[in-house]
Image (spheres, rainbow, N blue to C red):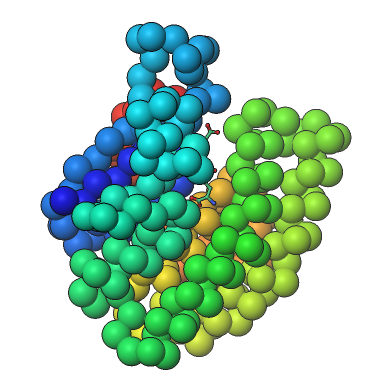
Length: 219
Ligand SMILES: N[C@@H](CCC(=O)N[C@@H](CS)C(=O)NCC(=O)O)C(=O)O
């Protein structure tokens, strides 16, 4: 039995988007981040990342987590890659070279795109983007993104997708990391092909359906 732990308002969107693309059956356990609760230890607190029951499955104390038979995996992009290989059909890597490329794009997304994107996302979400500190934080994040986004812009001048001339797990992983930078509109002007690719990924029915369920969760 395949189970994904983690609310949609988390990095669980990455594997959940992939599963929505494939139509794979699975159980979803909406474990919430403990920091979002007033008292995660309260007896009536929902299952959260500090719940003893959840920690038995995932000592990392974070979501998402995948359980597939005896296999337990943490790290959203490792989970997404695993699902693509096991259940993803054409979304998954079809050759050794594609597997290597998918791993490359996963690491690129996790290391070069996700962390500055998180700085941008939270600064906008906290309403601080116009404050001097917030603007400086966003400028620093945009600066860290400049090389990887220039690399992507050159790639998307030649290709419609990240690998294999088709939509794959690599697009899902990168798109979900780049989504965090989306509130910063100047990036769209500087890297139009990259943000056009992101918009194409986000127009897929599986994404819009997954985001609708995410947005229906309490903020
Ligand atoms: N690198 C990890 C990050 C996991 C992570 O930090 N998850 C957050 C939600 S997106 C979390 O569960 N935080 C738990 C908490 O703060 O209580 C991944 O990609 O899965």
